[in-house]
Length: 70
Image (cartoon, rainbow, N blue to C red):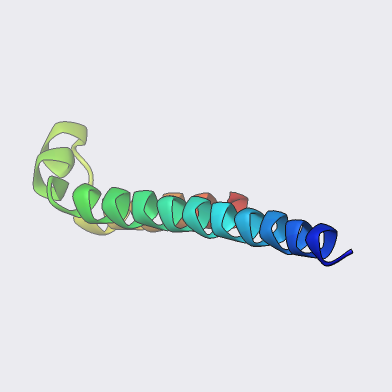
């Protein structure tokens, strides 16, 4: 009986680990995306002929939508 219980705990632990790894990877992508998008703001402003605050707002909204959907 204890072998079956141990197997159930091991499967649950494996699922928890997989979920934690997936969540960590998603957070890493969001952080990198947000960080990298803030670097070329001046080039984007120049290319699109817009304002820096408009580009920053778009980046913030993209990050919020990505976070809400994951």
